[in-house]
Amino acid sequence: MISWTFAAEAVVGYVLLWLIVRAYRRRQRLVIQLTVNHAGKEFDNFAAGLAADLANHLGQLGELYKTIDEANPPRRSAKVERASRT
Image 1 (cartoon, rainbow, N blue to C red):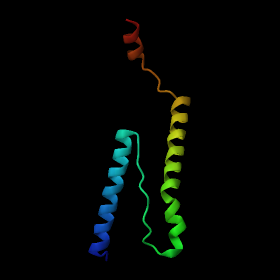
Image 2 (cartoon, one colour):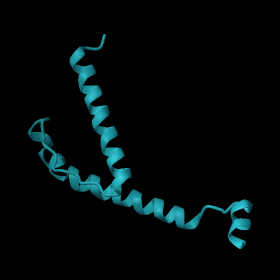
Image 3 (cartoon, one colour):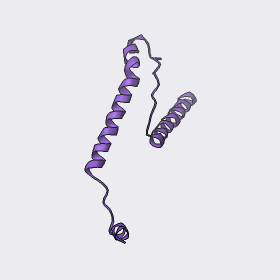
Image 4 (cartoon, helix red, strand yellow):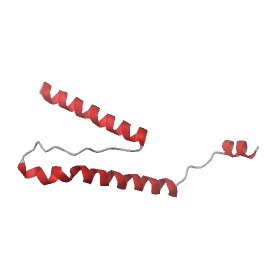
């Protein structure tokens, strides 16, 4: 059985992730704050570089989608083309 604290943490995590995705889509800009290490001394290096690594990967994904969108532009429907001719 799932404990109440775990369920609450999962809900809070889901809501935060949803807000981050929504903010990113709305503003096309995402600010990633420095991460705090709560896992122990052995993860200090990982936590220190996590924000920069995440920003780098998100930037790469953005560039990938731009490339895909430029390579496959949306096609105009015949109805739109007729309307643009008049």
